[in-house]
Every structure is written in C-alpha cells, then in structure tokens.
Length: 260
Image 1 (tube, one colour):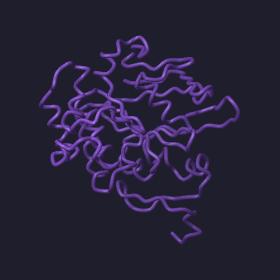
Image 2: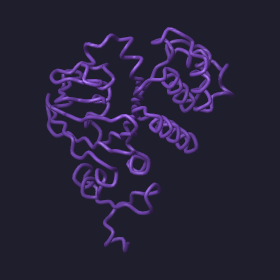
Image 3: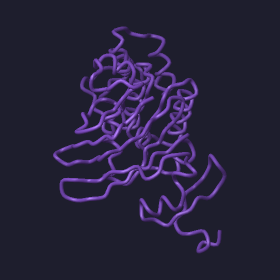
Image 4: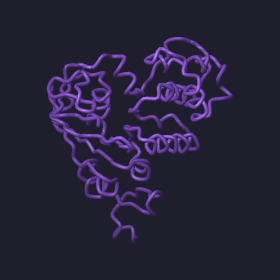
C-alpha cells in the first residue's frame, strides 16, 4: 500500500495540501483529478518521496518514505514529472537504460520491454535533442518502466501524446496493474479517468493568501467519484455523462435541458 497519512505540504512558501489522507492499493489504476491548484502534483511528489511533508507522512507498506534509503525508494517507486527534463543529449536507448540506475545493472530485458511497450524501436538510436514533445514523453515514461518499479506515479503522462499513443499507454498501464503493480496518474481529462481508471481521487482546494485547504472531495469508483453532482460542486460546471461504461463522454448542461 502507498499512503498519505494526514499529509500537509508546502511549496514556494504556500501551504498547498492540508491534512490529506488516502491509501492507494496495488493492482489498480488510480486517477488523481481536480481543478488547477488543488494539490494533485504536490500529492504525487509526496507519494514518490520527493517532497517532504510539513506534517503527517507518506508511507509505503507502513514504512515512512522519508526514512527510506533513496536507492530502495527508487527501486520501489517510479515517478514521471509533469515537465520532465533530459539532462544529457544521449540516444533514446541509453536514456531508457538510465531507468536501471537504482538496480545498478543494465537490465536488458526490462529495457527492451519498455522500448517495445512505448513503440520506441524506430527511435532507439535518435538523440534526445531530436525528439518531438510526444516522443520525449514516451521515452521518459519508458525510462520509468525500465526500472520495473512496484509503483508507477505519473503526472499528466497523456498530455503530450496523440490519441493512438494515449490508448496504447493506457493499455500498458492496465497490463501493469493486472500484473500487481500500483499505478497512480494525475489527469485533467475526466473522460479518461471515467473510462480507464479503477478508482478516482478527487481533490479540491479552498483558501487564499499563504494557506490552501486541500481536501479529498470524493474517492471511489469512477461512476461515483465523477458523478454530475461532484463535478458541479468541484468544477462549478453542469455536466452529465453519455454512452456506455468504458466509452463515456462528458457533455455540458443537464440532461433534461439537452433533451437526453
């Protein structure tokens, strides 16, 4: 289990998360959603052990992440930031292989599996400086996958991808979850969360000045956590869902007004 326990976080002198508790289970895709400024990225950073809480703690299987040796933590948790940087202009294959650093080996089979999963074979010898934004996103996620972490934490991993690569990546996340890995992704697209997540965590934040009260507004199956009532309260938008489970679309307006 990966847990936030009464977690409060500060970034840039502003308290962005206040007293959040949530426990994520392996074998599931958990989507973390909410308006801008709700604390989604900060929560993910804390769950990766990369942002120290001002109070409370983040824990992996009951162990405090802050007290865990960095290499052990990196072996267990793979993290993809929202705006990832590439420090060295190396070939794609070498960049993906860097995901094996926590294990201090080249992990050839894991690297090849990650390259295949993200359809990077045609790019494997291309320098990182010659990648498009979408290609860069796929390569950096492959680097995370090559580390074979027990948990995959990704901040908006689909944002720079075209539709085909979005669906391919979601399918791979589902394969990882079915194999027992935990997957947590920050998403802005509520339809993607509704159609593909096993569980949705909805955050919202209220406040001003130097303090925001970030809270878990809903936590549960997508149909419950992303109900029209929750969407109205959190995003201030009247909307409803159309279509069948797994292929739903979010439509603005209430169903009576639109004749549905």
